[in-house]
Every structure is written in structure tokens, then in C-alpha cells.
Image (cartoon, rainbow, N blue to C red; front, side, top):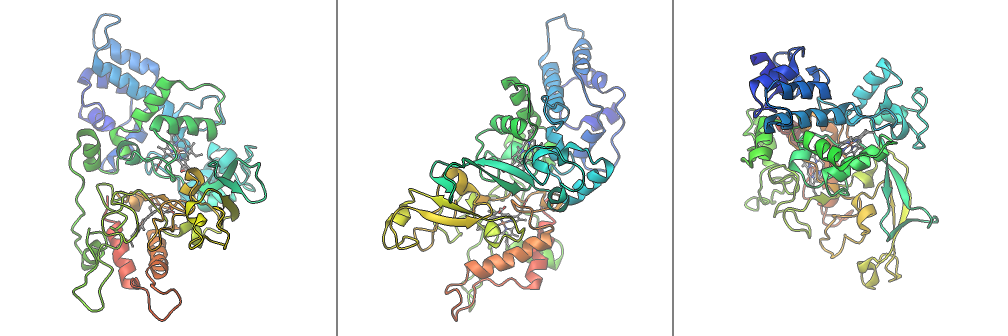
Length: 456
Ligand code: HEC
Ligand code: HEC
């Protein structure tokens, strides 16, 4: 019995022992010493029959289903919908892109899967190099997935946004990495890199239609079961985070750090203002926490020197601007832009409410219709144009690559990105004689990386 409990983790804490035992007969044991969420990988794929047998094993009269058994059968059905059901589409399931181990797919995962089976549905449709859904998986059309593990997302443009020269275009395609499904479903109400989906149900409906190209209707009940399945224990990077979601327990503490490097790294993540007691003042304390604060390390705090309230969830950290990924750039036209109407602040001398923007992916601006967020100036709010959801950082060491376009392949790349970011945004006079307020040294970058590795 002990082994069976390990196999199912804490998911069925309410289910009676006999129910669990009946449903799991024949399941291989979990590999000892591995992450408990990986135990899920060892489970036999459950079926309705398993669930029915589980109910029968309770010895209740027909029609009398105890609540624990209903919970179990709903869990198993949710798991089947997430991992097995294709909805009559292109063969994909949620698991095709959101793995059990990391909740995402890395380029290394993609290459491994391609070698094992070039017909893996990961490589069809928006996983192939072109988004026409032609299903190439022949190696000549999968370079983007093998190199960057990005998916071609189709985004419906806000009414105030168009592509220059093509007023008829209503949807654009942008390559985006697959955010992990660990922690987010249970602990983050803001869904998608640009926050465009209101609920897990609507998010799943979109994924089933767009990634899986479903040919059958999905029911509300199925969407509920998928949503709930993504909130079970296996979808958290640590038991503390699972407890936070289930019982409203306390948020994980920032680990103290053992080595000198980790302890120095921690200072970037503490909710601290700059240190004005030294000359020149030190702007590094709290530099990362300014945006990576709160229980999930994914919201701004009161020290971010930008016109947004604490708790803001979107910012630009110049990932689209630098475009290290080398993605194709489009010129977008934004109309009804308030700040462009003011002759003092308009972009091009024409106070016509129109702002033109070149970007590989303007992020939240595509769905909010706002590109004028660098005003009021100073300091601007920077929460629309090229802005993305501030990533949570718990478990980040296991979910490479990073940023919305997967342009940072490692945490070292992330640290180098932030060296360049702070170099640009903290320079008070641009190319003038004054230097940037924050210049990350090689030692700082190492310290930051060693600390990020501790955030489990
Ligand atoms: C082809 C790969 C693919 C498949 C299949 C897929 N997803 Fe995703 N998923 C993505 C990508 C890419 C994003 C981010 C897209 C964006 O923000 O524009 C995403 C985002 C999400 C998010 C939001 C994560 C966050 O950080 O906000 C959730 C939750 C999610 N997917 C669940 C699912 C579920 C449930 C299914 C099955 C019904 C599914 N996905 C199928 C690629 C995929
Ligand atoms: C101005 C706000 C802001 C500051 C300051 C900031 N971040 Fe971020 N961080 C973000 C946003 C927004 C994203 C998502 C960006 C994107 O995908 O384009 C992000 C993404 C990340 C990611 C990628 C996570 C993933 O899963 O892809 C890591 C790691 C990270 N930040 C670490 C740091 C570190 C370390 C610092 C300090 C050196 C820092 N951040 C400072 C806003 C910020």
C-alpha cells in the first residue's frame, strides 16, 4: 500500500485506500529518489473502466457515488483529457507541449523527440517552420522547433492595432516559447505571456482549437476537468507552493543562501530600496525584486522607479527590443494613442494619435491596443508595448529556455541580458557623460545565477 501511495502522490488524500488500490493495480512503482511529480509518468494511463471499478470497489448501491470516488474519477478523466485526448485534431494533446517533468519543451527535448520519432505531433502545424498546418515533420521544416522550441502563435489584433500597409490583416503570427504549466494554473490568475486569456477553461478551449486543431466540440465539463487537473499536486515545483494553492498557506521564503555567492545574489531579490548611505549610491540591492516580488516573485514592488503601482504584472525588459532571437520584425500602426495627441509628447510631430512601432512581438500591446505607455514621462509605465507577463521565478532552474521568445537558453544568458537591460534603462543621459546607475559585473552575474538556482 505504501508504494501505491507514493505512485499517486498526495492527490487522493481524500480517497479511501481501497479506491486507490483498485484503480492503481498494475501500475509500476515510482522510481525512488526522483521528484514526486515525476511519479505521474509511471502511472498506467487511466480509463473510465478504472474509475468505474474504483467506484464499484466501495461496495455502495448502484447510483450511490461517494464524493471521494467522484473526485477520483474526475481526476482520472482530467488526466486523460490533458494527456491522451486529441479532440479529433492533429494528434496533439496538452502533454505534447507541456511535459510532466518541466511543464514545457526545451530545444534539447525537441531534438531528442525528433530523433526518436520525426512524426511526433510536436512538429506539425504551429510547431513546424510555417504555420499553415501542413504537418511537415521531415527535418527540413522543423529548424525553429529544434533550435528554439518556439510555437507560432496567432494573435488577434486589438481594433486600434494594424499592420502597416495591410489594414485587412486581423491576426498576426509570433514565435513564442512554451511557458511552464508548473505553478501557474494553481497560483496565477494572469494567463498567457500577454495575459489575454481570462480563465484556465478559456485558455484550454483556445489551445484545443488552435494547437490541436480539434474537429469535435469540447464541452464545458471537459474544460472544467482540464482546468482542475492542472491544479493537482503534480503541477507545482515544490510542496510549499502546492500547500499555498490548496490551503492558502504561507508563501515560500527566499532561501538564505549558503555560499558567499548565493548570499550576495540574494540581495538582488530582497524588497529593498537603493542604498543611499554609500557614495556613489548603490542601486543593485533589490534590483530584481523591483519586478520579481510577491509570493510568486512575479509582480512589481514599491521600489520600481516606473509609473505603475506595486503588484503590476506586466513590464518590458527589452527582450523584443533587443531581438536576440532574430525574429522577423513587423511595422505596427497604433491609433487612438492618447499621448500622441499632445503636441508636446507626440512621436513624429503630428499630433494625430498614431504611433508606428517596429517589433518582432509587441506582446501585451497587440491585445490592449496601447503603445503610448512610455508616457507620462518621466518615468512612463512600460506595461504594454513589448511588455510581457513578469515571469514567476520558483522552479526556474528546471524550465529553460527563458523569456517569451526563448532567446535566453540558460540562466547565464538571462544574467547577461539583464546586464544589457540595466545598462540601457539606468543610464540617466543615454550616450552622455554620466554612466549607468547599475552595471552588473561578471561576479554579480554569477551571484545572480547561483541564487536563481536555489529558487525551487
Ligand atoms: C503546440 C504546443 C502547445 C500545446 C499542444 C498546448 N500548449 Fe499550452 N501553451 C503553449 C504556448 C506556446 C503558450 C504561450 C502562448 C502565448 O502566451 O501566446 C501556452 C500557454 C499555456 C498556459 C498559460 C501559461 C502561462 O504562463 O500563462 C496554460 C495554462 C496552458 N498553455 C495549458 C495548456 C493546455 C491545458 C493544453 C491542452 C488543452 C495546452 N496548453 C496545449 C503551447 C502549447
Ligand atoms: C522591469 C521589471 C523587471 C526587472 C527589474 C527584472 N525582471 Fe526578470 N522578468 C521581467 C519580465 C517582464 C519578464 C518576461 C520578459 C519576456 O518574456 O519578454 C522577466 C523574465 C525573467 C526570467 C525568465 C523566466 C522564464 O521562465 O522565462 C528570469 C530568469 C528573470 N526575469 C530574472 C530576473 C533577474 C535575475 C533580474 C535582476 C537581475 C530581473 N529578472 C529583473 C521583469 C523584470
